[in-house]
Length: 141
Image (cartoon, rainbow, N blue to C red):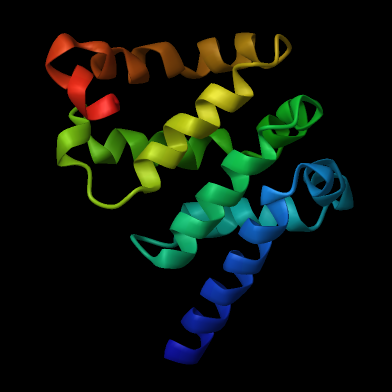
C-alpha cells in the first residue's frame, strides 16, 4: 500500500511540474485522460501529499483561460470547494497549503468570463466571503 501511495504521489508531482509550464497547460487538458485522474485524486485522497499535488496541478492548469470550461466540465470544482469548506473560514487555522491552492484555483478560473456563472451557481461567492473579513486580512498577505 505504501508503494502505491508513493507512486501516486510521484505521478502527481510529475503532473504538477508539467502543469507549471504554461505551454503544457492546454495540451494536458486536451489529452482528456489526465484531468479525470487529477479530479479523482482530489476527491478520494484525504490529506495526502498526492491530493495537495493534484490540487496544485489543477490550479496551474486553470491559469490558461481556455482550460476554464473543460476544468469545470471535468468536475474539478466540487472537490476543491469541499476541501475549502472542510478547511473552515479562518485561514490562520488551515493545515498545509492545499486550501490556499484551492483559493488560487478559484481565482484563476474566475478570470474566464464563461466560467463565472457556473462559479456563482456553485456558491463560490458564499464560500469565499468569510475569507474577506478584516480579522483574517493579515493571513491572506
